[in-house]
Length: 434
Image (cartoon, rainbow, N blue to C red; front, side, top):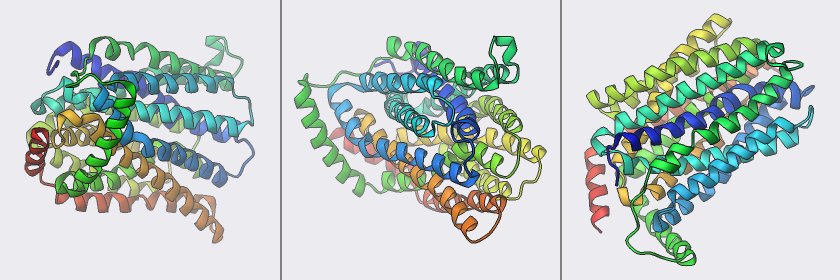
């Protein structure tokens, strides 16, 4: 075990620096814009939004179905890093392959994007689970926040470079902005691969009690999954937190994935939206660190409540935005809390689960997060289509869609209120002793 070893902590956190390039440049930034203007050129804006929402949902369903089982197998066979490498490699290759997709070929773009998102999301299950091996419970708020803060900084640096390439393609030898955007997908793959090396080389995971063959590990993992599924159902603290997390992270993920598409749908220029996304990244770097300290002072649960309240305000305000200055202000506000709510949720959950089953329990954690990502984009896109069908304009349809996300923050906050952290720690200790 390397608990609180500085090299292990930094190496672990650098994986967030590595894969956040995908979350920023691809998922939140260029893919929605490029999909609407290049791969899905000529389609009705509402239709292209629905396609993007369904693509995110398809990736979420796939990861959600397999996450807990893979986590159980990884825990039994000491294979967290092996699964991490597999999913990271999948995401890297699929992302880089977007460079070769031609104009108008939206089905191929969707297929590669879904596969890359599965790689990104699947890798995060095992990345998250390794936090219990590098950090003590006392320092988990700070370590979790460090990962997200480096993710915002690293993702923001590469994204800024990619934005520069698209704004001045001739400087970099590109014929036009479209060619620069396509090349940016390749840079994400390279960045992700290079900065994944520290976690592979310098982060260890504790050995399993017994050495088992591959088939035995799979069989034991499946048995363990069934056992843990029944445990979770009867553990009030973990069950309540997962239900709350499922709801409020739905709103967060939907805003992250659909914000640029939403801005374009209500008439903002793509360049203004990209600038807003950059603002979010660089505000998010120090803010995530700040939330780590806030969590240590008032507790992770209190910090999550602050972020939920801000996000509820964002979802309501977003429906009434009229100009790009408001969008920039909104970007700053999102940057203040986005990394914080993610970091505090991960560290809070890490303290109430058995450390020796971390991959499996984080499998459930990510499963619910991905099922939330199924409903959020689908709700936003579906609400927009319904309002459009009723005869309203594209702008009103899109505004109604973003406003519908607020219900998830209300419901998630109510459930989180009833989560007792100390009771959760006692349940985790009891399970570890079994």
